[in-house]
Length: 77
Image (cartoon, helix red, strand yellow):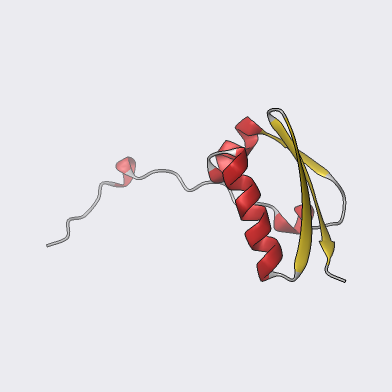
């Protein structure tokens, strides 16, 4: 049988990614520590970006710069 979980033991929900801002067509830069808050790592965050682009008929370009990553969304042609 399932048991009730004490709310104090639950992990906090990760912050919501501000897609409205990130998909505005401008270049954005995120650090590894900021990306960890959303997806656990830069690699995971990049995967999330590509998934969002695919689901919303967008293209995304990414550039990794050491512990930072730049990305830009555009409308598909």
